[in-house]
Image (cartoon, rainbow, N blue to C red; front, top):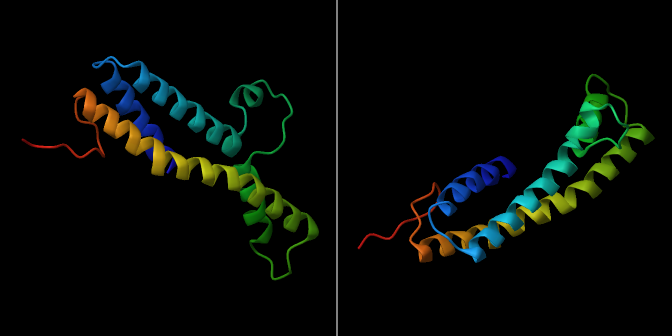
Length: 130
C-alpha cells in the first residue's frame, strides 16, 4: 500500500501543478508527511544510515530478524525472537493506521478535490464523461 500511495502522490503532485489550489497543496503536503512517517518507521533514517550513525533497528530489520531466526530450526522461538516480534507488532500498528487513513480518507478527498478543480486524470481516479 505504501508504494501504491507514493506513486499516487507523484501523479497528484503532477496534476496539482496544472490546477492551483491551496487546499489541494495542503492535502498533498499532509499525505507526503504521513508517507514519510511510514518510510521512517519501516526503514529507519536513511541519512543516519548513510552516515553510519547508530539508530534503533527499523521495522523492516526487526521483521527480517524474526523471520531469519526461525528458518532452519525446529526449536521454539527464543525469548529474544519473541521480544523482536512483540516490538515489530507494536511498531506496525501505527503504520497500518496511517495507511488505512490515507486510503480511506485522504485519497478519496484528494480525488474529489482534483475532480472539482478539473484537474487532468490521474491513475486510480474515475473520470466522469459528459
